[in-house]
Image (tube, rainbow, N blue to C red; front, side, top):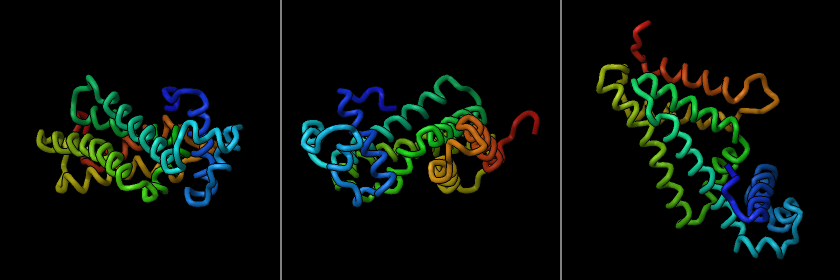
Length: 198
């Protein structure tokens, strides 16, 4: 997810900020602490980011753009309503397991974004929610899903995947792929998916 961040010093600062925010919270973290985590001087941080708020925004932007790209790629070329939801929810939950630390930081610290930054992130979050909602709506309209409340069901599915970042631990019993597979299975059960074998 961070490979596209350049130069290397900017990437190191973002990763150090993720670690610091996860450990101390946004408001409990100083720019000096972030710079030290990146092996840099406090003054060097300002060459790459004007403020701590800019660091938080860049993390949030990278995280949300990565999620959106992952979900769009997951359903690209996939046919069948159940198959599309399976692919979507597998990718959604797996991403939140793989990137649980950064995702958890953003879920906890969204409220610290300034108004302009929050609007940009909210626009991406709406696109993510719309992807899930559209798959639910299309499947329900085709009779593939038994859904009484499309909006509420889509929100529940998204929450199921996003909340993985709150409890997932790499040292636990499940891999990100196993978490993704379970989430996809549970999602189809929630939708009452009608498949040829059901």
